Image (cartoon, rainbow, N blue to C red; front, side, top):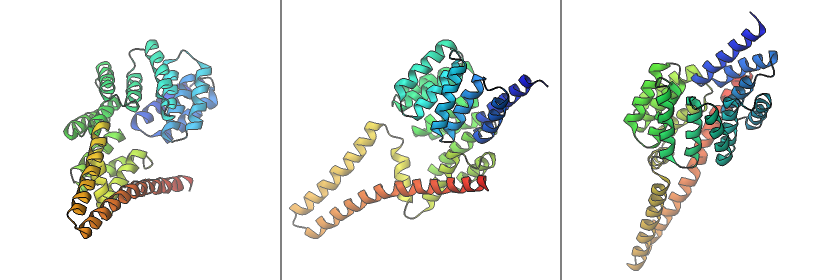
Length: 311
């Protein structure tokens, strides 16, 4: 087998690992490929995407620039740069790259998925859904596109649609980790903790360090926690609302609380006024502390994974 054939095999293997959400194995394969041929733009671009998944944004940006130097006309390269800029929360700059990539290759589902992610960061859900539908028209059997549509349905609170799309994705690729994670999140929202754990187990068997699987693990722990359980249910509910709906819900809660305090004061019920005031302050503190505790739970799980990898 020639060096070029070996490089092609490593890159093909990396593609398979990326489709399954196993970034660390893809990174190893891509490093092997680049050690033989450091001018492969597709290897640099894919490595940039994997490094984004690993939250190594500086290294990802370096690889995206290296890919651009190798071949500035490769649509995959512009797609990777768009993903880096998206991770940097620069959606306008990211859109410039993905628009150029789509001009170069209008039949690549990955580029439509990237464009959809950009629109989501810009809170244009309808356009994101339209872009994912276009990707699905090009390849109706693409597990990743089906998974992205499942995530979008979950975000909108359309649980049955999320289950259907995730099931379709797993039917196409049983090793597609996001399918298991989405089904786990749906089960958890329905109160089926045992079912969520089953899907979590399946996800962790594929990749123990997957960030979304770790988030599912932390969600299960939060759901079962006496302290975090109420906050988790509220967060799950409000996350399905639009930005306007979320603002309306929070403003509504504030108005109701203030109205109760005013009515108690006007009625001369000082004790009740104090109770309402302390309750409102307590809820504010609770909603401020709980998310940070949830994030610490996620970080703790990720740190355990990193320690095991290093060992």
